[in-house]
Length: 528
Ligand code: G4P
Image (cartoon, rainbow, N blue to C red; front, side):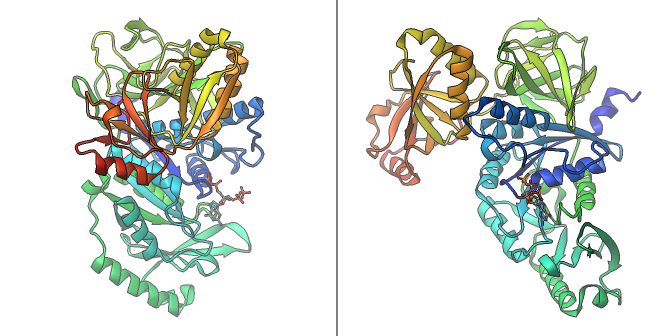
């Protein structure tokens, strides 16, 4: 049995980000196939069959259940132990999607080659850059008509503000997709459509090989030679340090569906990434290889059984080894405890585990004691990890209870759902809890809130959509928001901890606020 240091060394923990439909699920599935974690394509998510009607809670639960089981997947490949964190998208897009990125050591960004950088990718990317984690780009669907690869790179660099380094270079696209040129090995990997079959053959041929004209055609060959000359001359140099600091993104062109370019991508990815890195705590950096266990909570999932109001808390192990007999210290609760029913996810199966290591994600039974960002550590070495930022909601509603006699249940339900991190609660300046403003990242959360308050807390609410889209935390301490010069459609609010915020209907009003209030400091993320 390998010792815990070897176990940690072989860990790689990354998140996959993309705009819906770029191919995140397909790529994940192919990676799991390589790892032998699943044997059949199509088993990661029954997405098509699981489309839900938002009015039906059972359907929401089913969907959430699916997103739980597929939220973390572990598999082994060539001696590495790989944890993939799925970032829920589509209607499930919520603050959880952002928080998941706090638990990853690197991110893989999947981009649709015909579409380029899309809205959701842009938002997720921004969160990745908060921690400077390495970002790898997989430009997918090359078997379909794609945009010019130079344009795609330029768009990534301009829109996301990261340098790019293409590891391979596509030869044509769509019906004319002939394969890629591997810039490191200086060879062609040819793509051959296989009688309408999805799987393809990859043939390695040197760029100077005489067979190349026959394989990709003279025109493609000429274009490729020109492109490579241009890339080598005008592109950025490869710099592993810059990759590891999130300043340079290695780019791979491929086609997840036809399994083209996935394995070379995985191999290069494993070469360039590192085992879990030290994390910031109030006592300084915590070394993942230290003997003592530590972890932080990044996601709380409400239990699907409404008879029990218990939950599952997902935590990222940051150091040492977890053992189910271990006594751990819950810093925020101030208590020594054992973690109950620790579980890990292997593709579609959830299993109770005996041990886990730094880099791994475990889910534990939560009787309602954990909050997002909490630290678990050894009782003999107490410290607290830096909090998880509060991400900006984009949809706001005014929420009131219908029956004012049920104030207690209303406050309890709202607070518990907010503690899970599903919603954020704000108030009018100096306002109370009888009427609050709820902010969410994805609109599905409004339906979930309404349904859960009714079913778990027996409270009916009235919800009125508000026309705000942007929120900013006021960073200047002691500033009275009433003294600010703002557009008439900007609203001053506060959160439950008394921090002052502004909500805006459009970006123009944000600029107005900044231009008309000297020294005003507005933050896009709230402190954790
Ligand atoms: P997502 O998780 O990012 O939302 O994307 P997903 O993998 O579900 O892929 C979205 C659609 O794009 C799927 O088609 C999928 O088959 C297709 N796709 C993914 N990768 C490639 C690729 O490399 N080439 C081509 N041509 N298509 C790709 P769908 O019709 O929506 O679903 P399905 O019925 O095929 O599952």
